[in-house]
Image (tube, rainbow, N blue to C red; front, side, top):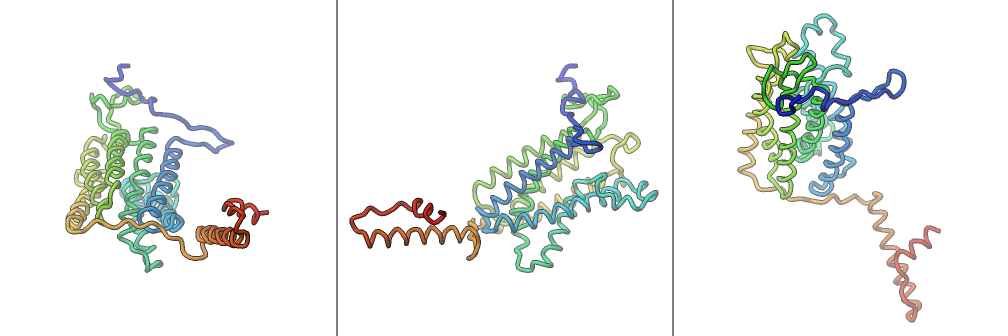
Length: 315
């Protein structure tokens, strides 16, 4: 097979791996998990270095958004993409380990953020959503799409495009998961480059929405028909295309706000008194006082090094 003519179906396919009994690791789940780990690492770091927010506080918030968003993504997918299954078995809404929708997860995350704000009134919701939520979302979504590409769960129409994938039936098709994964690489790169300097609040919302929504709207025209396993259509458009229209205008709204705002000021996280970090600082201060007192009583003796004083205390 000529690689320039079509990509072999199994080129990006790997797994599943049997762990024990019915327990298996699938490529999609593995890549999503890797994406979440990277998301929490990168965003926790940004929270502490640029927003004055503890990494632990972000992680608590992030876990809530992920769990709620994941459950809502399943509900959204069943209602909008699989209504016939819902009619047959309404209990399918509670089987959150089943099918999911990326836009459903995004919408669920937004709802979860507002619910969190109701309990934590002191939270600056706008700053958290823009500087942490949307920033971190880019890493998760990119790895999620690589997971989609590894299982080919977004089949497109027939094509002779050089990035088309030769399906198991021998037909060369668009692979929308692969296309999106490639596009998300550019979105993540744009976010990382932009984050080299302070930006006005709302910048990341505008950037990601305006880069992703038009691309997703176009990509969904390349999907195969519902009869062939493609997404459901409502008046000729998929649910994701309607969501893309909404988020595109949200992006335009925030882009206009960004033009009127000054860049935010980066602030490093300062742990409160009594925290582990401050305890370490106080220990350092005690060590310095110990060394100074010792030097005062023995002026002819060279001051002891700080790390030696620490060793004495530990003993």
